[in-house]
Image 1 (cartoon, rainbow, N blue to C red):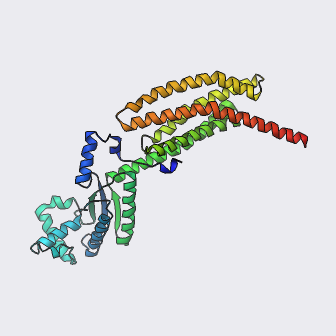
Image 2 (cartoon, rainbow, N blue to C red):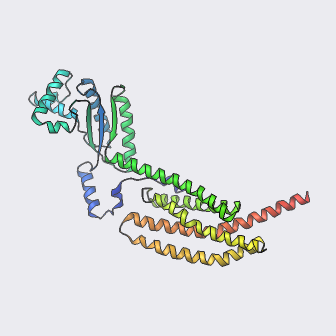
Image 3 (cartoon, rainbow, N blue to C red):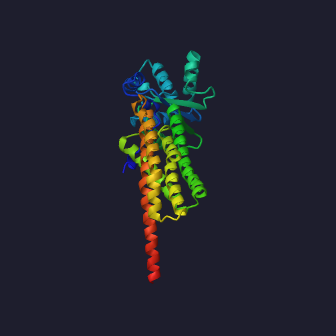
Length: 351
């Protein structure tokens, strides 16, 4: 039930406690100055064309109206202010001129007065322009809304194939990086479960034990994600690693309990006797090992760094459920399956 609540987050500032100085300063800048990270949008085309500049203006205005960003800045703003200044500051002229020759004159005028400022927003050949805006919400969900809005407005304002619009910036890059890491780890987790199944088949030489062990560790992984959802712990580049660690460490308990069970079977014990010997013998070692491992990780709960706290909580939970599953789930299913097989054989004999 916690899985639908699970969310991803790529904002590194969420790693800091709310009362830390970096986080306080970050929140202050975010509140008073719209944000601290910017989105950069590159527009490629004939940037002396009044139609393209008008399209850029409409794009900027609608993107700002979403409330996701602050005031955008681009070549459009420079031309608007220049046009207004050339008409004695009349606010009615704070628009992009519709005359290409006049636009060229304004650009030459600005370039002659301060070419370094102009070069921040347009290339010397006037083929590539930059739209810059501070982003209010830099969380993964906020970035997703921003990128969706950009895609929608790109199609609306720049339908021509002659114009190319690309979004970039630190938040876009961080979001893409986090998405790559998370997808890579999830794919790695699936691969790890398959690899574990193959290795268990070689070690145990038992389909039943191998599949049971993989089902158990897969179920423990799902529980881990569910707990993250209930506790509001985001899936980020730190917490996504925990499940892979859990697979590597937690599978040991299943191997120990089932190996001991098979050993008892080879000695001539029936299913219940073999399971009892495995649980009472190896079970004690599993329980003590789980307590030791959990004790080692649970101290991270006292860390002032939130990702370390999450790491300690989640790894401890994985170890607990993996050990409990090895001592309860595997024996119960093994005994039930043996009983079910006996019942089937009895029915067939009676028939």
